[in-house]
Image 1: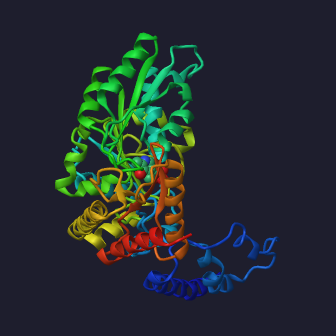
Image 2 (image 1 turned 120 degrees about the horizontal axis):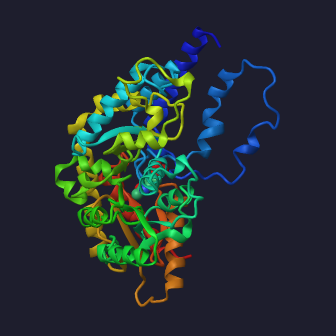
Image 3 (image 1 turned 180 degrees about the vertical axis):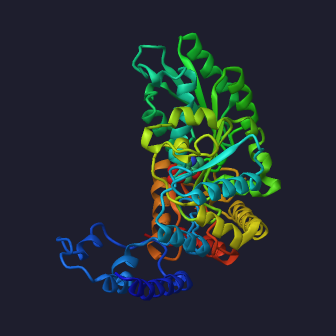
Length: 473
Ligand SMILES: *Cc1c(COP(=O)(O)O)cnc(C)c1O
């Protein structure tokens, strides 16, 4: 492809994206594709002769769209918001166009320095103090793994420089609430703690971690000669957006010298609202914090914000310093390759910069407040409606509900009934919700926060749920 053809196809593709976003609301939210249906339309053999990109671009509608679930759709209420603003799309295009590696300052100084700028903007936006420094990771999963590797090495006194975890020392333990995201346990397993040393601490009626049970679990491990190492507290759990009491957890972590990592993957964005900051009061005492601007904020995936209080420790755990990567400026600059797992790094700060200058803090705050109000509205509707039950508090944008036909007590039948309701809504293409289990109860999660979602769309999913509950099988 030469530059002229790139210009032509590039303009065509930008038009296609603009058209797609403009008519998004008319498409079925959840992809109706059957397993294997998309793959079956591609040839088995790779293209031998080139020159057919124009044809591929022209076939996006026909080949790809039927297999897309539309996360930016106004009636997307599944999983969590994963907004990709159009400004962020342009930032990713600029990043790809530059095609630069940002592993070291010298490999593209702008990549490092703009990342420092946007990470500092984001830190200020969510109210984290200057004692934190930030770096972009691809996901909260990677950030949490990085945090637990830091924790492990702090407790083990840099055992990685010697026998690692294989010196026969006392086992190290990790704590998180029973409602913590699966990425926490995965990170603990990958970091070598072992499933037997991950403690799932019990929760209260609001599904938040109970500090006295954390304290008891630590005491039990200490009595057995184990080494308590890290605790992950969550601001906004995945199932119900429960809020672990960060200050109480921090107090325990400090007393027992545990690494405190705060997972606010979804909820971090809400911290741009001063009235939400109480939700993670005490966060300044954490060793590390992760939140995902690639969820609710609108910076497209993959952009996870990881803030640490001691970048020197992070660098000591993560750095590799072979001679071919050393540069004359090393004493004066930051080399982000030493702040995470991969060596190679995309210029992801570009899409953050584009998104932030395009939307601005004020409009973003108004949008998040709109979403919180929409969730409160739906919660009140559920509370008022006969036959509907709300299963958890609604501090943020997720409403957990289920339909309970009068007289029905059997959990098995209730579960099947609610699965059928969610299935009906999702198959209709009019809205997309997530059926999920909460302490054994089948519920339906309505997660609000797509940028395009207005009150009428929330009214729409509520009406669709009602119709699906009334429909006879
Ligand atoms: C979404 C989510 C994660 C996982 O985020 P990834 O960036 O996909 O790894 C972890 N924790 C919580 C609380 C989440 O909401």
